[in-house]
Length: 300
Image 1 (cartoon, rainbow, N blue to C red):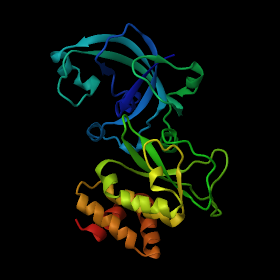
Image 2 (image 1 turned 90 degrees about the vertical axis):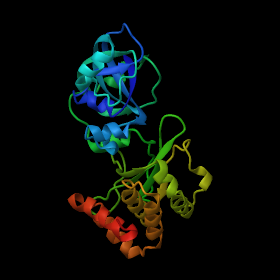
Image 3 (image 1 turned 60 degrees about the horizontal axis):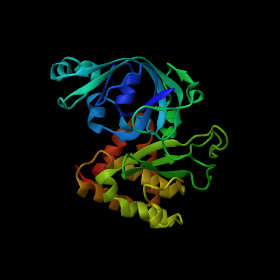
Image 4 (image 1 turned 45 degrees about the vertical axis):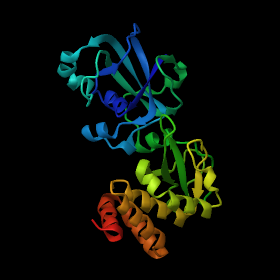
């Protein structure tokens, strides 16, 4: 089947049936089913505009199938008139083409793979699980990061490199969940929970904190970079301290506050760190606890 790579949140908006025109700079005579691949790039401004949480969006995987029913030129007048269909948030970019789409179907489980430019082909068997049903958050998050080997129960947290288009990258933190008896889940079908992702200036501001945790786990600082595929496995305390860091600083823009939180968490006693982790990851009250922790360590 023919395939095309999309960025987020545009792919998710297509799958939800909200976006029915895909804007491209080039024309195609192709009509028919199109496999939807999602690249690593993500537009945070568009996520905010359309009330989508960036961390819930799949990247680096095949996610669905949609029908290309027509391809038409878009001029400036059409750009404005069809905004409710293409959903672009930028001004008219100049002569482009609108790929009219219909009948989006979501894959039951995303299929991790690298994309390519232009139209390309993927094996039909990869798309056999096409369905109108939504993916779970766990299926979506687990699909686009580095594949996990069997995990170490003594190191229940994993730090994984998330590769973006170009040379950029972020870091995502995972925790292997506990069974009812308190042991770590293991074996076929077990999946870690994705806690948070950090990138850009906020990641740069706390990289010393992260490297300290990696060195404590026996890794070299030189191992951290966009080419890394295997997860960094961390002990419970090291992992929960990084989880508090990621959850606390990800909404911040002031780097002095980011650095203050990083310093405060590194100095925090173990008992207090465990207490805050339980509060900051506990259901409906987690967001309020994260806000309280930011206030405690860096003020408002």
